[in-house]
Length: 611
Image (cartoon, rainbow, N blue to C red; front, top):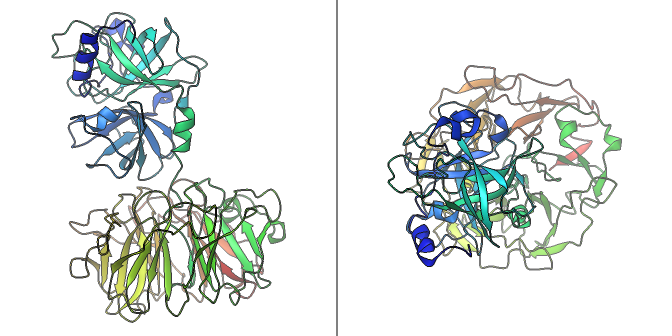
């Protein structure tokens, strides 16, 4: 601040990595709520960032899948914080005012987005913090003399490592273009070790508004400190709302969806065409037009007749466009559509999210994004976010067994821009006879799409993505290095395998349909150093054979972060099964089947393809 001396600034810089922890005053009278930890769930947006189970700092949820903190929280040595995967493992606990409870979520941070000029950064979580309301982004500039509340999980006046969120009222002594000088309103400490990056909020109207993050502090009054000065400096965020919104797009759809042709043609992994993280269905009737059925219809909460579903495309007969790919190719949070014609040309249509009338969903100009992608040369294309940047890439299984990846640039503004970079070969030996099925998903929870390959002998091997597409053969381990994660998974014994996050922990699990129609869930631990699917393998359904339920739609239709199922019955009706997340015993995961609907309209002869 302008009134501070050069020495004051230098001392602050020297303790920047120490600023943090619990914000409680030196006496109970000075702390929020009379000195007791905060118990009001209005402040559940406050988060703790941990690096090794011991050290850490604080943060705030600003979007369902993002927390905001300071760059100094991530870099104790002052090394630059760069966009990309974190340099070291980071765990974020959010929605949990008492860290000893089971409330809220514990999520791995998978991507870092630093602000270019301020001590502020966003952390993308592996999955959304469903049920936790993000803090409102304040847009009114702070004023000298204004009172705020500072929050954090760091050290207090009496505790080294508190388990609870604490807060203290602070006063703005001075305001600059990028920061706020604060002091405690009642003489206690302001911010201590572990509070770095925590939120300072404006109170009033019952809704806290984020105005700043804890930047540096003298730490006077904190346990174990001899310093008497209790001032601190905050990094302003009130003028960063637009930047936060621009860089906090959900990656619900980045992992991609249905790929036609595929090795499990009776399974549709649905996209989210409106960007609300709820799966919708694109249905292609016999006339080749596409109709959009929203998640509310699939979940059984709303029952529009098929004739009321808007048309969103035409000319999508299998003879015209044999190849169809679903994914968030431009990274805007909505699923987009790629269609491939017989000569191998791929054309993309970006979703507008507009379902207000016919033919508005893909109203923008299309873009040619590839050539030579014939089905004979490339039997299978699989969408997925293999580098973890929030955009859907393409993985090709070539006829000779080579795996090749084209990374998405996100640019659909003109032809030839989406996959303009050099493709990388990432595997070999994946011929259609050697590898009968390739499953995609984030099986270890690091925000990148991995592979599980089912071999002809029924064994399954996991190929976790490193995210490295800088050269050939760096993305996945070799076949010799890949870990076996299952045996006995032959196509005859297990005709269908459904990938999805059935328990809502942001890690992809598997649901297997046995030959007798039984469904069993295989929960992933996310740990490829031990056993990925250790069991027990709960029965979660019966009578799911292809004869009874010819097609299965997979997706999160309710928006709770868990993968639900919609079954197309043999009579042409649909039945919905919402995941409860409960794998404690058999037949508890899918217990909320909705009444069948659409009878006679969803037969395989009526709806030829579903995306």
